[in-house]
Length: 70
Image 1 (cartoon, one colour):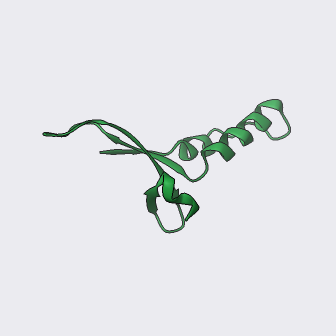
Image 2: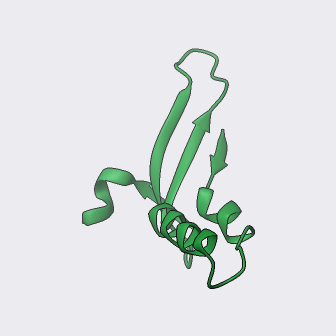
């Protein structure tokens, strides 16, 4: 299993503030905030694929994305 959080990678690519690229970056970062993907790459007797998850960084906690509103 692998965890991928786009927010982590976007934070490291912040363009110069005040530019059009920075405004686009802020929108992308806002859309990625609190989301993660768990990638199941290998499984002996089961399916592989990607599962969308909700992520709480302050507690390093993952939730089913559907439960985010609870």
